[in-house]
Amino acid sequence: MTRRKPPAWLRRRHRGASDRELIEQLAMGMAVGDADGIRAVLQPDVVVVIDSGGRVPGTSSPVEGADAASVALLALMTPETSVTMVSINSAPGFVLEREDAVVGAVTAESRAHRISAVWVVCNPEKLRHWNG
Image (cartoon, rainbow, N blue to C red; front, side, top):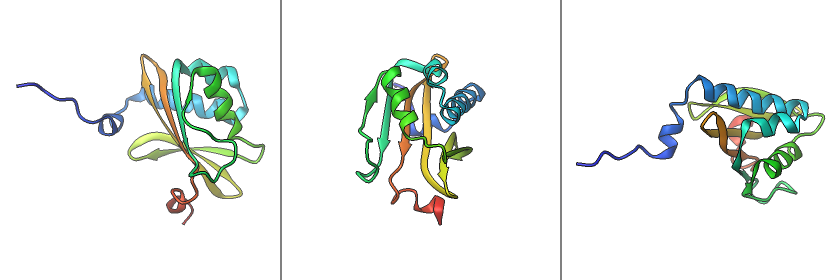
């Protein structure tokens, strides 16, 4: 009998403290506009998926590589954007807020003490429950 691994979405729910620290470092890098700080927590082959639903200009998915990923993540930030740590689907994450409205929800997955995948939801339809 072969043991199967649980699906990825379920494995992500049980992340440890190191994952939380990586997410916090990513959030801080985005909040202060630190491209080097962002790249430092990303795997060289990181993949960033931005779900804008076609409603947020300038977002194209997926973005691959630490350099391109840091540029794409920083492009989501404006001087008015704040970052707040939250739990998203029982995993560490953060939201991007402007004018008291959530404009993005960010989660990530790590491998070997660095972030290997980032998911950003900017689609206003999918963020309705955050802004209800």
